[in-house]
Amino acid sequence: MKFESWGLHSNSSVLTSNFMDSKVTLTAVLILAAIGLAFGLWFCWACAIPSSTFFRPVLVRGPREGKRVSLTFDDGPAVYFTERVLDILREHNVPATFFVCGKNVEEHPDLLRRIVAEGHEVGNHTYSHLYLFFKSRRRMAEEIDRTQAIIERIAGFRPQIFRPPYGARWFGLIPTLLERGMHLILWSAAGYDWKKNVRGITQAALRGLKPGAIILLHDGRETRSAAEIDRSRTVLALPGIINGARRQGYTFAPLRDFLPTT
Image (cartoon, rainbow, N blue to C red; front, side):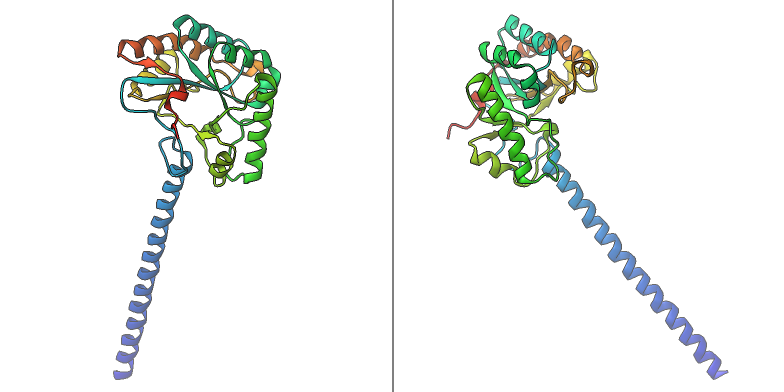
């Protein structure tokens, strides 16, 4: 009986020990999972969220003094839609900045010339609308330099501003830009014109307005063919955004007015 009792006690001790080991293992796994999740969320914020300033220097929003905002357009130039945007800007006497893709500029050089001739600013948006995540520094530099050369050949200058497609940043981007004397530009207000209707675009853009706001809209769509591009909702929303901002007391300023002076 004593032997049997000792055996039961021994088995109970082993089970208790195994249970405790399992609890410790489970706790360790949960801690590691929580750390991994926290790192993943931080990483997403640092590399993809426009308001992130982890990769710096970066301009997300202009000066808070006064009530000035700046309009920006990505992914052009594109036949018809860039032209209509330019018509509206001229009609309302509003300056804007166009972050252009080198491939689109090659196909529509006259549109770039018109952008410049009408006093708007031009920024680099890579050659092929490249998603920069996990891209080497050399690959990013090739996209930027190719676009710089194309713009210089057509317009006679190299832009000093760069916006990454999708707002995605990666390690090596900042030194690449600094070597070329370029500024990284993101945005603080967006019309979400890739998914909203005309009313939604207008409301979203106006809702994001604050002094120094940099507004993101699109006049093209990546480097797709004309048949695959429809920015008619942006075109229709643009007058409402301009008039709505002015009713709130905002004035439109060139993006260069928001850049650091040193």
